[in-house]
Length: 184
Image (tube, rainbow, N blue to C red; front, top):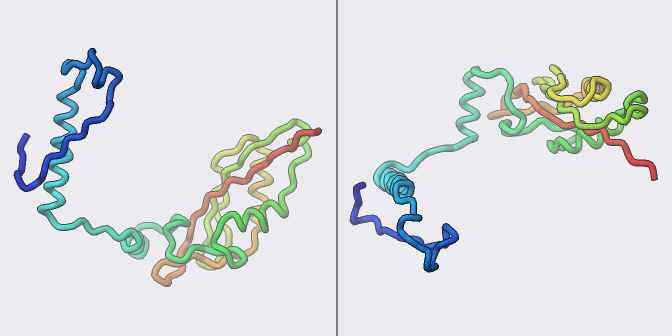
């Protein structure tokens, strides 16, 4: 291991094992190899940061370049500069409250059989704000899946998402929850 005199060495003493600072505390308990590798890694990392240029990373710039270059036709919802909005809100819970749960009908057969759970639904909001490519990713039962897909496919238009002012296709994933209340 190489040491640089310009960077101060700091030693931390903490209770890392039960025998620490007791009569059974012996050097054989310590894992010197692991500690040496860890210190060497930290030392090399600090030297690389102090000697080299500061790392540059602007997530919005990287995302914009990726999607404007045309390498991907669908943008994840949270990567949009301006996210798709439903009834003036970009919060997905508003879509669930004001649309999905308002028009969701619990299948009668599912109620009789006591079927409940969450249906994970993926869909795309296209450049015109239409909901397309609706599919269930995970579902506890086909009856629940069918109802969740029906309601989301019937959604009114959204305001599309944008990256650098350009309308993009944005993909969303939502959990539609079907929960039965227990009789009292």
